[in-house]
Length: 162
Image (tube, rainbow, N blue to C red):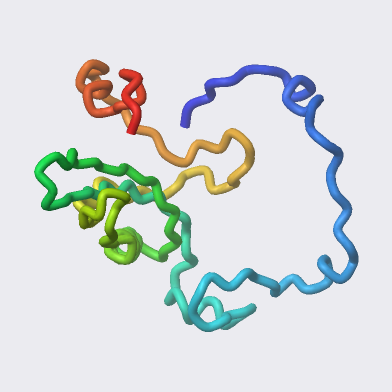
C-alpha cells in the first residue's frame, strides 16, 4: 500500500458535508443486506453460503476483446477491475471467470456491423489488503518498468479517442 498523500486531516475534511443522521428504523435491524441475486441469507445462514471461511474481497483484472467481420473494424480491448468476494483464491478466480463470461455480448453497431465482446483473459485476481473502502483506500496497484510500452497500449495517454 502506498501512502501518496500527506495533507493534514483538517485539510481533507474542510469541504465535506456534515454526517447524515439515519432514522431509527434504519438503525434497528443489523441483519439487513442488499440483495444482488440468489437467495437471501441473514445472520447465521451467511456462513453456509460461503463454507467455513469468512468471505473476503478480491479485485479481478479482466481483459475483454471486441471483434467484427467488418473489413474496416479496429479491435478494441477493455481492461476492467471487478470486485468479487470469496472464501479462497480459487473461488475468487472462478467467480472472476464466471463474471467475465457473463459480460460477453454481441450486437449490431450503428453501421449494422455485428460486434462481439468476449472475455480474452483473467489477468490477475488478488485479495484486497485494505478492505475499509474509505476515501483513498487503494484497491489495486501494479508495477511496470517501461512507460513507453505502457503508453503504447493506453490510448488516452496519447490523446486517442475511442
